[in-house]
Amino acid sequence: MRRRIRSEDGVAMTVAMFTLAVIALFSALIASTAGQLGETSNQDRDSKRALGAAEAGINTALHRLNNAPTPLDNLGCFTDVQLGVLAEATPVPGVVATGDVPLSVQAGHCPGAAGRAGNDGTYTYFITLLNNGQHCDAQYTTQTEVTSLLALGIGGISVLRRCITSIGVVNGVQRRVQREVYSEFRLFQGLIGTGDVTVSTLANLGTSHVGSNGLVTMAGGSLFGGQVEIYGEDEPQIFATGVWGVTHRADPWILDPVEVSDINAGTITCVGPLILIPCDTSVAGLHPASRRVRVPTGYTVTIAAGDHYICELSVTGGSLLVGGEARVFIDDDCPAGEGFTMQGGLVNATGIVSAENLQIYVEGDSTVSIRGGVLATANITLYAPRSSVVVEQGGGLLAPIVKGSISAESITIGQGATFVGDPLLDITTPFEQIAGVWHPGNWSECPAKPAEADDPHSGCNG
Image (cartoon, rainbow, N blue to C red; front, side):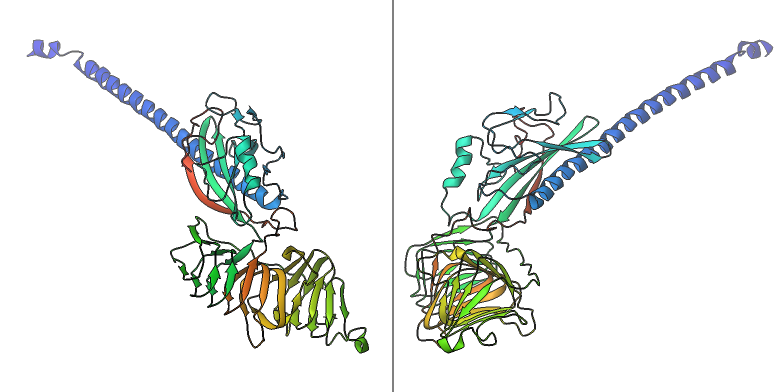
């Protein structure tokens, strides 16, 4: 018995050492796992921060788009440096110089703009020019293709598009996102209704362009040979005489709201019958206190060039002339203000003139009416995003003729009335024809690394 006990001397020490070894092994495994988890956690944290940095680049680009002056040649890059369209690939400043990050950009793309996003993050965004109907996966890549933007027909252009690609980097971890942005033309050759557009029997639209988010309805016997550009599920009902085309757009029509100042109107003069010179402002011309402009039969009212802020514009048989390029902003929320109405008379009747000479902006949600009379002809560009516009014969002897463009919530062209989209409207020069608001479109995340080293947009599906 004693020999057996002596033979077990040292067993406790062996067991203890084995136990310690096992514990040490598990500790090492736990430490290794913890280290790997820590590294994974850091990478996950950096990845999320890099995504946030890339989003910051998108938001910065969108902010600058909405606050920078809009060049009228459609070729501005809207970055910190206005470099126009690049003819050749050039180095891009501010991008981390690694083999995975593009250091140059192809012709037709804009230079990158870099910035900091917090949490040790940086971003570089790039803007690419797109045409109406194109998306981020169909970009212009050559100078010739970009220059062709300027040669497109007026009536076929309805949207300015840009594709923004932003690269976010945090501690070497990179993520890349892409968003389309678009902006409407504020003025348009034709009719734009964010709701429905209705054309009655015997109305004449000629080759005017029609755009709508709702239902476009044309009655039998109406004359139409233009293009309908519609958004949404409502199919246009067209029974008009002529040849027309129908296209569907990817984005809804957006009419930005009108902001009307309380500044008094500019110079408005009035001439009437000989016995009423100068005009009685309670009857004709501008009434300073109420800011109403009235043009009754027998009177001629002339609006000088520049901006005019009024409460009412009423044409009832007289002639409204424009002394230059004028914008009239109508606040129909004024006390007793009636917005814009026309019952006969002539508007902008200075001979052969373009409708862009008189732009009428209506702020409120009234009904804008243009009704026939002995003479009822208007050369105008009418922008009333919250209003319903009705062009109809009314009680007059002749149906009205409107030449120019109308943008409104809903539009009705009544029986026998004529609307002509003014082919002289120039989308590149007069006033602020391009809306100052860019709207975010489709968003997508691209693979972290571009497919082509010299093209930061490549590898994205749009």
